[in-house]
Image 1 (tube, rainbow, N blue to C red):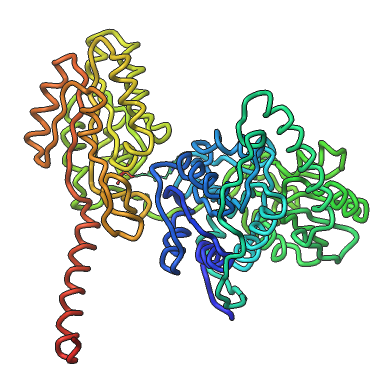
Image 2 (spheres, rainbow, N blue to C red):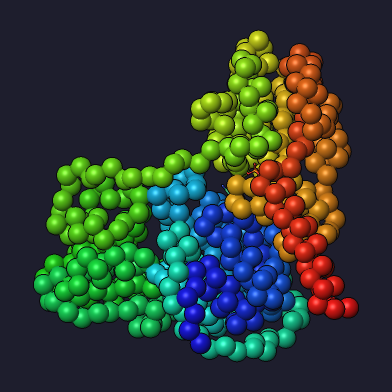
Length: 535
Ligand SMILES: Cc1ncc(C[n+]2csc(CCOP(=O)(O)OP(=O)(O)O)c2C)c(N)n1
């Protein structure tokens, strides 16, 4: 079979074909569509409240012999890093493939971290696909490797790979699961008390040494032999830029970047007069070469920032460090017309509040005309950074601090902040405003536990934000869909020195439109059924 597919789509298809028993994750660009496709294709997929939870549930499934796909964006792996480092010790019974979708140039992210560093520091295999075909092939290989070594595998596509289309050839097959799902106890291997973890760490390093040896001759690393003058070592999407920028060079494309195939690289370098590493982001391959004493050229520091492209690769090869032409960017995103967050920020911008913000559509309120929020660090940090300001500032200043957070973000990592607020209340109290638009709008309107619907939009139990806050012990909880009620609640909260939570609940304008459209389509569908005589 041959099909034009997005990288994310082909990962989902490979997950289906390899018999993944559960796909689980938290939305985040550029990874979000993987689970949506997987569900559409008939796989069992679910959103978790956050990435740590997703990985831990995945570990549980993999302990029973199941085959798991866990998806997240690069910063999601920060949240999931705690279980990541330890599942490297425990290993798994079935297979566990973790997608870390990185976002060079920050198309939709708060930082540009290069998660290849996680592979090295956690000690987990990492594969880097360059296009949709490799997304498909590498995912299948990742499952195979995970089963063979009983070990997690990281697959790191980047935005261009996730969101570009290219042809994928695959065998259309129905998967028949082969692994028995069963719990085989292994206390020594899975209970990571120091006495069991010490030998587990040694086992991990031994395993990595064996995988490194395998990787020296693995088919995942591809070589194109041309000129003896110039050899280029590359990985991921940079490989495609290299092929176009310098068609006469010999190329070594690293498919598994960790454990690093040292001998393979050394041997390639020895055969070429000039060898340069072309990689996006951090000098990860370069540092590995340096560690093993392999002499290579690296890109100038200015190319560490943003994505590479054919032009930039040509410049790197020429050693051109002259200023680059500015990148033409499209219109920056802004709050939609009709967005319910607008009214809140119009009001906040007229107050003298210090607003600690969070990540979601509402972060855009930092831009004109609102210029409302004063900080945005990472998901959940609005509440906790706000508490820090309240603890530190003199009372009259502290009283001006309010935290603004969205519904999905509240569930993701806002709840521990509420616990902190109740446990260590600042003398002036605090105010948390939850902008509840009934969806995870920023990443394309995914469900979350607060919407009471599953990934496939079917109903399930709902986590009610105000009930959570009351149960934790927040003193004053107000829920409204009216801006006048919000204004009054805010005024009172700014004076009462209590712990306050105000939920402004109004559906995302795009979600409302989508739901109306769906209802209309259902009605038309019903009518056509009648007209065609359907039962
Ligand atoms: C750790 C982490 N995971 C995922 C994301 C991607 N992301 C950005 S904002 C957001 C949630 C937005 O939903 P919500 O808080 O409800 O606000 P809305 O966009 O609906 O206004 C997500 C999932 C991220 N930035 N960081």
